[in-house]
Amino acid sequence: MELIDTHCHLTFEPLDAEVDAVLERSRAAGVTSWITVGTNLQDSIKAAEFAGRFGNLYTAVGVHPHDAKDVTADTLAELRRLAEDVKVVAIGETGLDFHYNFSKQPDQLRVFAAQLKLARELNLPVVIHSRNAFDETMEVLEQHGSGLRGVVFHCFSGSPEQTQRVLERGYYISFTGVVTFKNAERARQAAKLIPLERLMIETDCPYMSPEPMRKQKVNEPALMIHTAKFLAELKGMDLAEFAAAVTATSKVFFGLPSPANDPL
Ligand code: NI
Image (tube, rainbow, N blue to C red; front, top):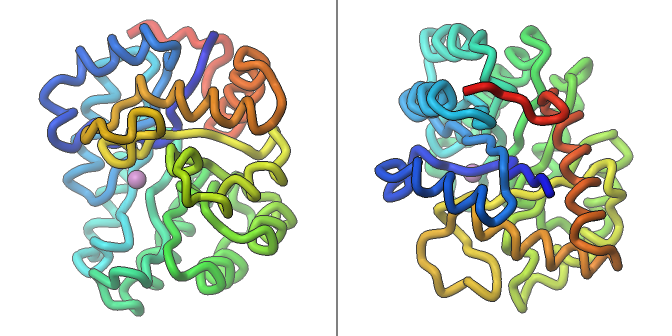
């Protein structure tokens, strides 16, 4: 069996200090490839460096809306340079977070649009973080997203109506362990609606361990197996069949080699 954790933060504490062991436990659990996602320039540099050290570890580089306030033209030039590395497979995470508003909304909008432009120029897919800003996110994508190779809404918990709108645009949707939580009925409704050709899974670790491991404070890629089992059951499939389908979708979306043959 082959599974890809399409959105993790291996550069974050405490995972960064023991990446070898984290990836070893992940492989043992059947989660055999990873995309570690940058959240600002420094973190993206670190993520690309990690990706250079391990086979089947890829990276997205970008600036999270929380950090949009610090982005200058130089930052974007550095991201572009970084994105030329063969192991950089996406731009992100980028988007809008109007829940926390750690950066002012005009800064978030500016930096989101700039990263969409970068993704289009580099022909890379985009990983979207959207919180309390669904309509605004869709609007920016409408204005600046034409010609993008691919768009995924990560850690999705939209309504059925929002799910339909995302699917109609041809975008992808990715679920974290949140879909296993008792109070996440909305995410489960969404998951039922999404065809496997558009569905991916992720941990977003070190946050949000899935049930039944929710008490484990530090999430890690190995635990994604629980999310995979949960969604397979929700979809009425066996795990192997579900894993093959979401892995195929993830490989197409991120342009990963099939079969996995990264020699590092
Ligand atoms: Ni994330």
